[in-house]
Length: 95
Picture 1 (spheres, rainbow, N blue to C red):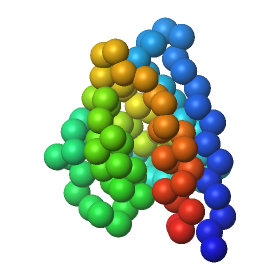
Picture 2: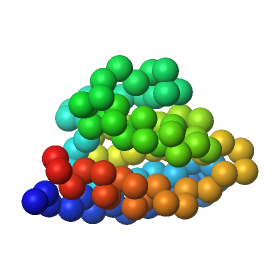
Picture 3: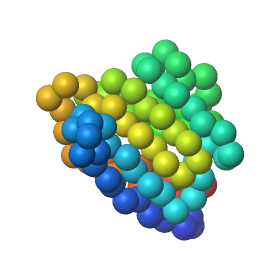
Picture 4: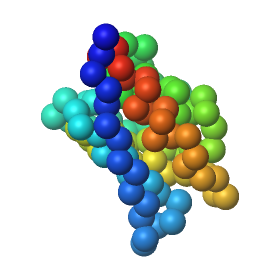
């Protein structure tokens, strides 16, 4: 049984289409990863890559940036972040 990942969603006031999710554990180690499309994903085991794949499969996302325990999502125009917080929290139970 895995320990749940806690996720806090924070919207950007300056950039309404950008949403930041903060977790209670790092998903990319000390480095950062930037994904502009599903084509940028290179692994199916790295947590940052798995997360980016899930997000692009969800649709409505232009880019994903993972830096340690912070995930920054640039939503496609007119899209919302509904369900992303739950997706992040539930997909890492086994890590």
